[in-house]
Amino acid sequence: MRSYLSLFYFFYFSLVGVYVMFMPEALIGFGYTTSEVGIIYAIAPLMRFLLPFIFKYYIQLTANIYLLALLFTFISSLLFIGTVHNFYLHLLSNAIFGASMGIILPYVETISLQKLSKKMYGKVRLWGSVGFILIALWLGEADASSIETIYYLCLTGFFTWIFGYFVLQFDEHSNSKDNDDDKGFSLKRYWAFWASIFLMQVAFGGFYTFFTIYETEQGLSKEIISYLWSFAVICEIFMLYFQGSLLQRNLLTILKVATLITAFRWLLLYLYPASLEITFFSQSLHAISFALYHTAAITYVFSIYSQKRLAQQFFLGISFGLGGGVGSFIAGYLYGDYLFLVESIITMGAFIMLLIHTKRKKTIDLTQ
Image (cartoon, rainbow, N blue to C red):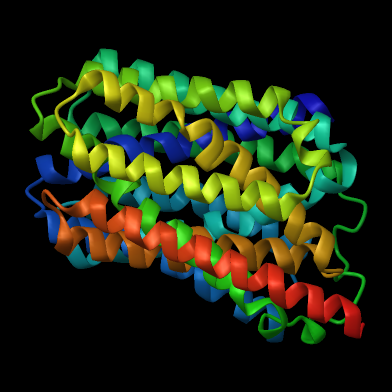
């Protein structure tokens, strides 16, 4: 089981790596403007945001839906080849890609959280980071052309489909709904928490979409930038491997600390845009602002909701979906010297929302 889950994470996040790190620059190579790239990179996350509401009221997330999403992830990556020269058709391909990816990961995350201990989850999940770093190093060295970048996207999409299929055998409830009625799922009860994870990913929008472009404009080569991405993921892997003991502590405290550190990370990129040393240091903070934060967040969501699959869908939809989409859209129009200052301020907003959630949750727990 661990081997199949590890291989799925490896290729899924290799696919994410190509899409996040190299496709924006590839689109610039095809003649897209930064605002058009921002729109393109907003549509896929927004699709991930809409999906949980559809599954909450109209569709059951079963094994057959999951398998269909795997297939369409690969098909949509192939569509990129034929649609990249047309903005609107490429936008549609990205919408299909985002919707499919938005079904796959929550389904597999639920299986992992059900089957693996907190300590073992990190050790399996880190293979996703390994895939991310290897594709960064490979494409950084290869200096792939824009069309070759899309070919790599298709290849990683194919293997995600294959190993995603094998993971399904470990799902004990493959064609059943969550334990409780999905219609009883409430976002309002913990609204401040959901607002916090939304703002956190809004702030990540500029980083994921424009970090490569931003550093290129500072005079760094694609090879050096690939090292920056890789270093961040090495730190992420280290955290995923050793975070088990940390996750035994108060998860909300971990989220608050990680959010503050993330605000500091974006501030460093704003204050010292041309400093390679400080940029490497800021990338080291990815261990906390992504790895530790992400694991603590999905574990926290898993603990407060009985509707496990739906909760993970909403986490992905509201954070990486709506938050990432809005973040990419805003970053496309704000891109410039003050981008990461704005990201830092937004992250502080996420921290304030966590403080509100902590206070409200104490009241909610007393009334239950």
